[in-house]
Image (cartoon, rainbow, N blue to C red; front, side):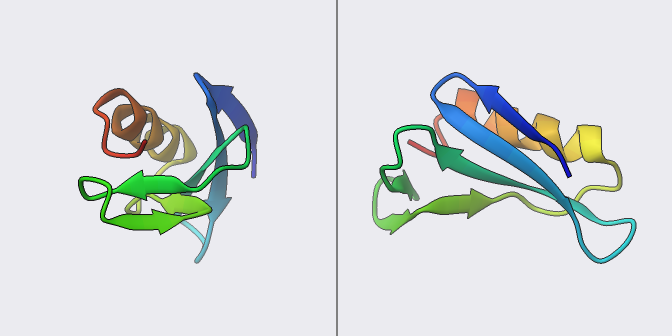
Length: 70
C-alpha cells in the first residue's frame, strides 16, 4: 500500500483481495470529489481493479487527467 500525490489529489493503492489492486483517490484539501458530471459526491473515489499496483496508480492518474473526478 502506497500513497502518492498527483496534482491536487492523493492516490492510495490498495491490494484486496490478494492480486487485485485498486486506487483510492481523494483531494488534498479534504473537499469532496465529484464524478458523473458532478451528480455524485464522496470523500474518495475508487478505481476499477487492476492486476498490478502500478496499473491501479495509472488508472487513477488517467481518471484525474480526463476529468472523471473533480
